[in-house]
Length: 361
Image (cartoon, rainbow, N blue to C red; front, side, top):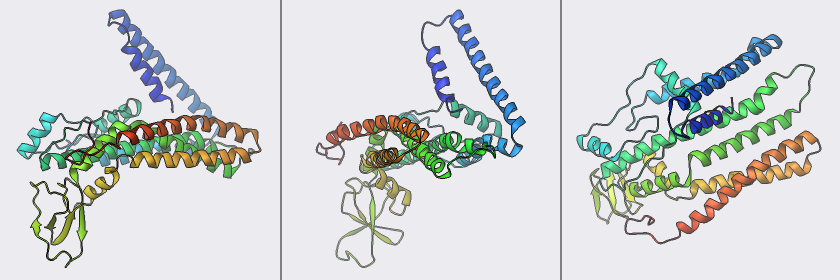
């Protein structure tokens, strides 16, 4: 179950190799049928053996993640009206301009249960990780529409990271404990520690895959165009000129505006955000500094590596040593990759800003 995407990726890559011919297509179809039949046979054979030796309640734990994924991720996602489709297929720039000019957003059409289930199964085997493009729009409406689309795309990626990391930890570290016989003994403390380590490692690795540096730079550029407003107390800056906030105006840094009977001060060099919109302020806080997410991942991964080294030095049982060493082997590569990206991107972002307050290409 954990290797479902790896097997599907190998089949997809094999289907793109070589020239297209009838013999090649028939061989691919036959290989896919054999693979699908083998996977179904192994799952059925395993379920039959588990059904003979365990209760029905234990078998229900096998499908618990899928039962949670469908109502939480699919139905909740389809019920919201977003400017972008929820499958991360970003709109092209011409369509985005036309929709903004006409004032009509591309709303998500309601889907039936069968379509949602089919898309959910397809997403679990072949996830879509298409990176959106940033066009540096100069219209405030286009900038806000782009931010809304990026927020929806970022939330979808984070939701994918959380589900799949918990999915891995559930089947690797938690589910085996449900099938332990009454005559067997296991260390509860070590099992909980192993569960947490597997979840954190899967979370970091999936985050580095779904939130690459190019994608974080895209979010940073969009946040720099969006800007931020700082709410001020009543009576402050009474002698400073104040303006009425307008959605069609690009406000410079330091200007004071009034919106919804409150006074706000422009923080960024390029401000088109809605002053009272908390999501815009949160988006600017998260992505204004381009290395914030990368530094957070390095902090988490470095702390995990240090703790695992400490546990490895104190471990007395061979199974604990072997398990911790294997996890450390993967963490060393992830930490090296994060540190390499941090050094390179730190030098890249150290160049001076241009007139828009953004890093040059």
